[in-house]
Length: 153
Length: 153
Length: 153
Image (cartoon, rainbow over all chains, first blue to last red; front, side, top):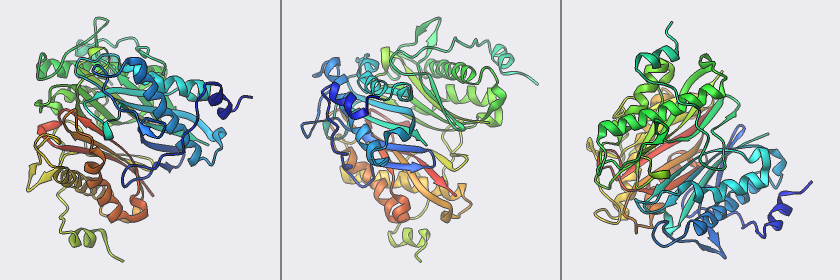
């Protein structure tokens, strides 16, 4: 069976170190069978991917930013589970926030960058419900922010 | 006892077919006693209701759009429960996102279109907590998006 | 042991009366071990604190508005638990929405006004995961809205 790390390698993706929060909170909290993951910003080469969809970033690059957020989520759930991805029962929900202009309409295609990675990595268990909405701006000028809820055994 | 379908008929409302998601995710996920419903867009006659509050849509029409989102939520929970609305213990939360201008202030009145329908249909069990916030834009130019969490037996 | 009320007094803070919602919903819902709190607006002397970060409100005042939202959350969880703060197991999540301009980037510092108060009041149990995002506008022109999820015994 292909492991999550192998699947990431096949896609040329590297799991970032689980990012510390930018502020006075923690990256994840478990309550019984649910693990809540704080909103993750997109990092590339250690820098936050900045931009605004509909203004200075293409949908394709927005989807890559969302994928980078998802990588951050995977890093956090890995830390929360001490590396045991097998304890994941379901990715329950993704909350996708897209920095964009008032006339932007392709939020689904952007957040798909996160959703597709999750479905690829976790298959059936990676199917999730989600929200995808626009926002005028995000912390540090980030292009996308994605939070998550997992259910675990 | 009046059924949900009868209550909808009294209000001249028809439950839409549970809408497939616009992207690579699923409409609902159950984790133990909680069912999370993906953000629903407002459909009317098969088309997404577009607009921006404070610019080109009245509060009244915004409330109707929110009600259409709520109908989508009802259709999804019906599908999730194989039609057995009696298994709903509580509508736990509605998350309302209103496409609007920076000077718009009547988000509560808009999202009430969803909240009021839920309270009408499910009575005590339809009382819920909620967030209501503005956004610059939503998928496909939708005027409103509403997501939900139910607890079920 | 210092009580929550004593800690608030030390900071010169007074718990507001648990605010009734502005619309047709309820301030909190418990589902098993989780209590969901509706989005709280910032009140000062009975009035909603209005403003837009990056335009007419400093980050410092934004953080005070977020703290006022957090006080509203504390008032609601106190009501939900009949005053027994000892039943709180964890503040699971804060959802922070900051009314701001497209070029604003200090959302974390604003929402810290809420996060810091929670960590001060509830110590280890007050550590939480969170989202912090910008929005063009909030109900009644509020500067900040914060919702919460607690786990309780």
